[in-house]
Length: 417
Image (cartoon, rainbow, N blue to C red; front, side, top):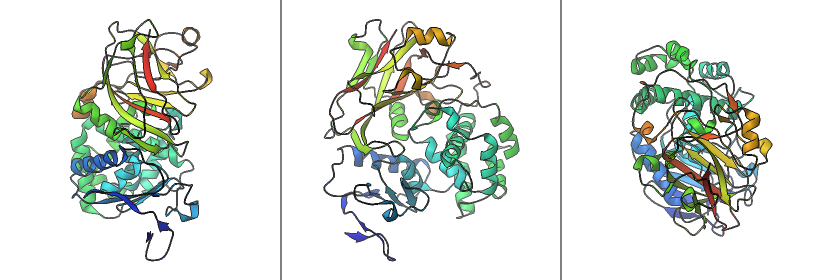
């Protein structure tokens, strides 16, 4: 057992796994799902390689509430997780958000939090959680988010702006911008005025011009513009776990995919909690949807979902070109909205028993991950939101299943007309 710092602090848990890129500390007596370390290590490698960071070890310390109280967690602004240089202290496994920081933190602070949020799975799907754009501009000008009354909402708005930059100009320019800022200063709390020259050099326009263009980037569901790092990376690889064809019959075999999420399985990670919620097991999959009719379908959790179970489905697109949904074991009043032409009352009546989701109206595929979307024409309208059917284009989708941690019951996804 080692102390948290030379200045004192709680005794940290022992090392349970180690590699050249990642060290994991955790209470020895607690169960960690078999795929957890490999998933975390793969994310560190992906981040360091993609952003051109010198490979180096990240130390991740799991400090669950069962073993450490808030005063013992070395985090000043959060009781959930934080990163200090290349060290992570977290209540859960595995926090992609903190690994994004620890593996390569180098952007101005507000954009840094936006990138980490953008590359993490969302914990809800409500675009209303984002603060107003003016609040993001104010935080960028100050170089800090700490004055915001809604830190989470600011993180989501910053992630939305990062999505806009990448969808408009591609990953290469974003990474080049990060490199310039990293080389120019080690101070991460840089006000906007200190990095606008670097921004203009990379993007070929002033920040003011880019911000004016951002006004045309519509608000959309959080899952629609988030790019969960490992899940979307698997979509890019093109290795398909299941092919689904929406069916009229609920028991059609080719309309459903499920998994038992046993903690001993190599592809299952956890205990994971979304935004400090109940601990779950989770796993990433790639599904290929063959929507042979091309019309709208109902999309639902299947198996025996507990109230804490959920599924995230995303084409890894953006607010212009993405399809995404988050499914929960929720009451109809808590369902997520969906775009389409069907009136709200009619769609509610037809699918009163389904778990419906939110999407944009045009195809989004894994190709997004590999190309800039600057050739996409202007934003489409997002003001006709209502409960209802999901327009699900054919293509590859990332699927993350979250199941209750204390059960091995199967959890899955079903598509049905």
